[in-house]
Length: 70
Image (cartoon, rainbow, N blue to C red; front, side):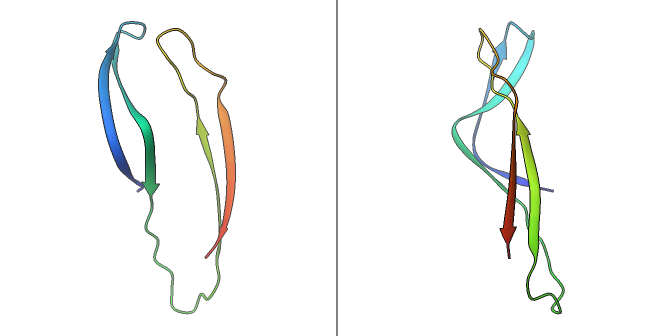
């Protein structure tokens, strides 16, 4: 399970009538993986799907695909 590393903020959103949580500047999502000793190289692929909103509007959702060789 990924671990969030950043300064998490919470505030009440009257638009959603619920609390919202956000990172004001930046956040790192860290996922530890363990590889067998027999694996010398590994290609890690994934995608991140997100959207950003303010009290007035939401931006169009974005999807970011990535690939990392370990």
